[in-house]
Each structure stands twice: as C-alpha cells, then as structure tokens.
Image 1 (cartoon, rainbow, N blue to C red):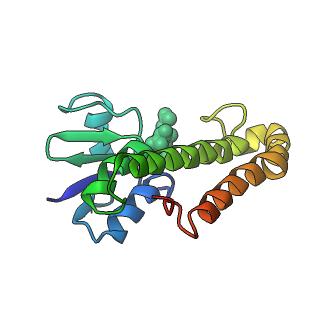
Image 2 (image 1 turned 180 degrees about the horizontal axis):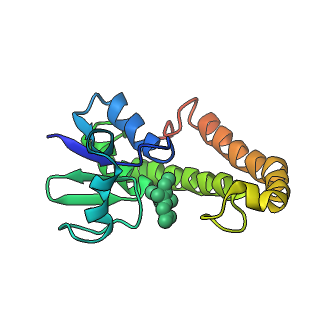
Length: 162
Ligand SMILES: N[C@@H](CCC(=O)N[C@@H](CS)C(=O)NCC(=O)O)C(=O)O
C-alpha cells in the first residue's frame, strides 16, 4: 500500500504533521507535489477527482479514499501505522489532542495574518504586533501548560493514561 500525500512544495506547514507520522512509521508513501509539482493537487481541490473533495492541502489519498484535514488524516493513519494504542478512549484522546494542536497552529498563523490570510504580513504588521503580544502572554502559556499537564498525568506520555 503506497499512500499519496499532497501538500505545497514551497512551505513546510501543516503537511509536516502528516510526513512525521508517515516517516516515523516507515510507511510507503509518495509526496506527490514534490515529484509532480503543486499543480497535481488542483484536480482534487477543484472536485474533479472521485472521493471527498478537500478544502485545502494537506490531503492523503489511499486507494479510493481522499482524506483531508490534518487531524482527520492522523486519525485515519494512527491505527493503520500502529501509532496509537488500541481502544476508543485512547484514539479519541489522540484525536482530541491533535485538534487542540490544530487550534494552536491556527492561532499562531493568525498572529501573523490577523486581518486577512491572503494579505501579506507586511501589510498588517501593526495588528500582528498586538495579536502576537496576546499570543505570547496568554495563549501560548495556556496551550503549553495544558499539554505539559496532559503529559505529566500520563507519566511522560501524551496517551499514557490508556
Ligand atoms: N484545518 C485544515 C487547514 C488546512 C489549511 O489551512 N491549509 C493551508 C496550507 S497549511 C492552505 O493551503 N490553505 C488554503 C486556504 O485556506 O484557502 C487542516 O488542519 O488541514
């Protein structure tokens, strides 16, 4: 089984979360855009391919399945690559943690693009400065404190309670 990962070639971004899982498990996969170019993603994004239409990269193709959203992709890959413990509770907790990481990633992204995602950072620097100050002071400590407590409660492992 060869998985096909689709993600932008020009940025590390969210595709890296999927690459890390695939690499850690030694899975057989192709990083399609790195081979065929970013245009290879367009038929999927335009809805011209069978399977669920992704809103944005990254997405993963596995036989007839098209799976998008980082947390959803990892929820799909985790059991298949033996990266999560058995059982509903552990798998739901892994998904819950990944969704919380996704929230953090969005907040970090938005601190550089507080007005508009499509606008350059240089064009929204003043708002970015205020947003980044709040991120540093309030949001990062709250997220990181949460993750530290989760790992502590699991005796050093995020899913250690299972
Ligand atoms: N929640 C989605 C976010 C996907 C996303 O924002 N992808 C970015 C690249 S990291 C993108 O290409 N966005 C295009 C857009 O939102 O129009 C996920 O976790 O996969």
